[in-house]
Length: 187
Image 1: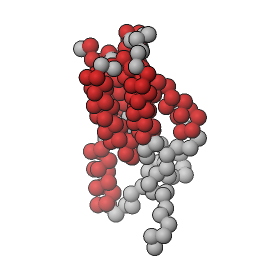
Image 2: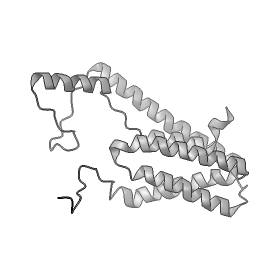
Image 3: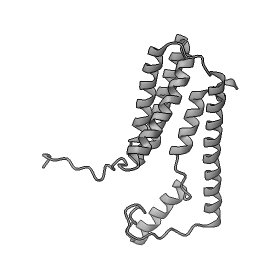
């Protein structure tokens, strides 16, 4: 149970809670609605992000309950992740010894988080899981090399630097969508 209160696990849970966007309508309900629309000859609507009107779809009470449950799970992920980071930071306070390992691990973790930040919304969760696996392998390697404390502090520093990157750059210039990208010279 001690591995749940480590800084890398806390960072993973915190980022999962931040990047996961719960949808009140399940995938099964969306597929069913698409089939009904095709059967009735109705053209499918564009996603809400591309329409000009700001109408929100009417949700059933079951969908509202599902959405509130998912929001609660998201809040629990963020809360538990923050708690694990805090416990891990208090445990490792003042034990940093190898600056070279810290800088190398910081670069790896910061690069992984930036990659997730700059991924388009449709692929963000997939890239998050792939980078989570890569971060877990990196963390395991740091544990086996005896630089676990440096790895923990590198995760904290990477979270801080990437938060500043998000605050200064990512909010003004969000990642583009693959629908908007144009390739010149491929006529």
